Length: 544
Image 1: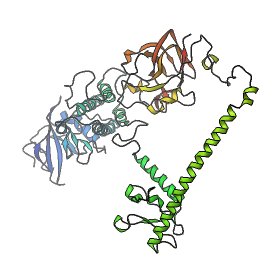
Image 2: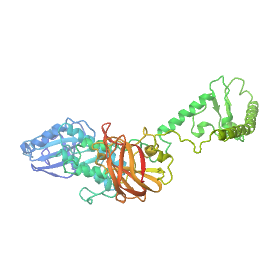
Image 3: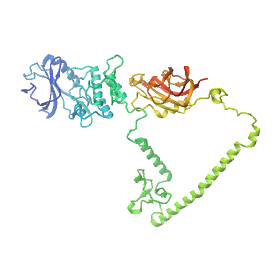
Image 4: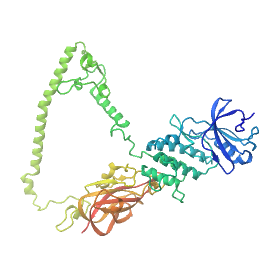
């Protein structure tokens, strides 16, 4: 017996038609939410008319999808090719999918675009499922806002698997369009060309690569897209932006361990009397125990409520605690003794320090030393730097110094690479360096941006003839100069370019007078399965 509506076996009772109708080269596909009478569960059933040989390729793809096990793609429960007569028993070609509860992506985006983190999560989970299908040679297809479902448990599912037809590159492009739709709230194809406002630069670049058809410019696979979506937050910047700098999990755990170590150093156990002074300030006023201040309790010490004894600690050592008044008097006496020690000891310690400094300075400027050293000029210490930079002769150019520096990342996502390491690039120690993060897929910064650099501030306008740079061999750089630290890349004039190495000298064609020098990295070198670069030491060459 068959359904008079679709020609399906009587096991499946259609409830209502859902989703858009798919028109293909071989026929039309309708989708229903239906009831499986035998297993008493809801299913999604799609019917291809006509059945028979016209639906054979689609059924073959469905059987391949039936071997997948990923939460991002609806499971395939049943499939039949049929005989082409939709009204005959078993005549319709159909695929039975898992019914995924939740609201569609189109319904969610009708309320507005998603935050960046949510969009990354949704597209990454969907891309991981599609990548699993690609591994078994199945192009999924049908990646539209109406078929992507946001499950109540936070997972993502694709309701119609597989579509009537599809290609691997089509899946990549569709995921790029969905990412753009999630971030902008505008349906694919309606957003203006070029850089879309409201999209982070790295995700805008990812969308462009996903939709690109130019050789070498597009994404190699959906798995690569999933990996790029999972790479944020990047190395060295994993703290939650909504949390104070030292309130990360590692921060409070570290402080907790340090506090416990300090408490162990003070002594613990039943046979040690614990000093109650830490629970009072210098005036003797009691303050709450460590538990009330978010700190671990001191081992061997117990505390009472503020209603009982004003939160005073009670020692558990032998011979104490029998008479609270006597304990309190002993505690106050101990505190008074410590205060007297501070009042007397600190001035004495300060006097000793002053006397020691006076003796030291007297030795430095003693008459014997002046009489013995008759050299008109103090001898200069040995150094590897050129003498002109250490003690410039009259008429020579003075040695140049860098007074400050910062990461210059105009094409980035607002999270510059390792900004705390910038001073290491001009600290005089070639063993320390500032480095970029590791980019994947391409030495051109993963095809996410055109470059990154460091702006050096000389403190005032100085005449330069070149720049000495040491760093990662093979990385390419440009030297640019400008009259302000903030500005577009074009506001800096290009004066030299070359490759980094153990000791690269980037000389200018003509001397320039500037305050700001931009070392602009244009290409990275292979490193740890990706690409990165280091800048170990920058020195300035003054113009003669």
